[in-house]
Image (cartoon, rainbow, N blue to C red; front, top):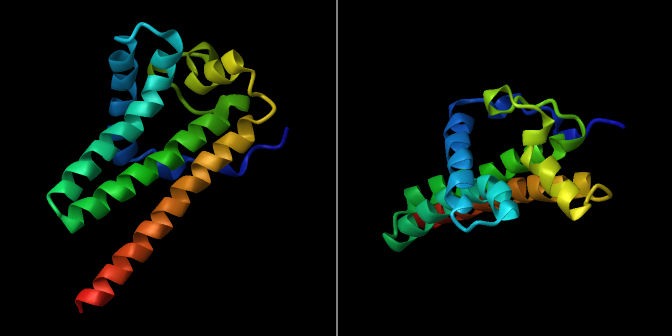
Length: 150
């Protein structure tokens, strides 16, 4: 099959991605507490979105505009990261932590479990482009806020 548009993930293999990866892996441990295998597997991506969302709520509560913008970019940037990880299920080209094989690919396991192979690339693109949409909306909001204050 043709590789997805999301194949170029090198720009995410930066310091920010490494930080997000820590939260991703911690999410597996955190959600394992609930004793549900599916939630444990999904917990990595959930936590990767949950942590910046908690930061967003904190900055919003404190009415810290710069903090809110930072958290929004971080939150929506994680949608890009998760979307790329989801798109990789057919190609298995992303390096997994510890050099693990395809049996450790979270989204491959989830798509297998829920039999979502007919929509795997569509779902990954929805998540990926939702991230870009959120980033663009954040930029527009920031620009509007800046224009009002000047």
